[in-house]
Length: 37
Image 1 (spheres, one colour):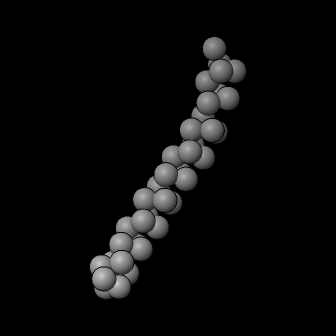
Image 2 (tube, helix red, strand yellow; image 1 turned 90 degrees about the horizontal axis):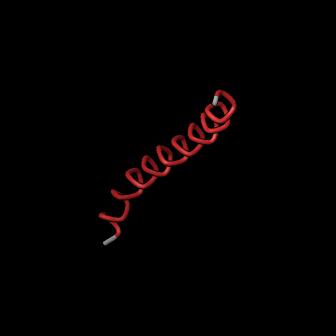
C-alpha cells in the first residue's frame, strides 16, 4: 500500500506542476488577446 502510494507522488507532482504552468500561461495570454482585439 505504501509502496504504490510513494510511486504516485512524483506523478501527482508532475501533473500539478503542468496544471499550474498551463494556468499561468493562460492568465498571461488572456489579457494580451483581449487588448489586441
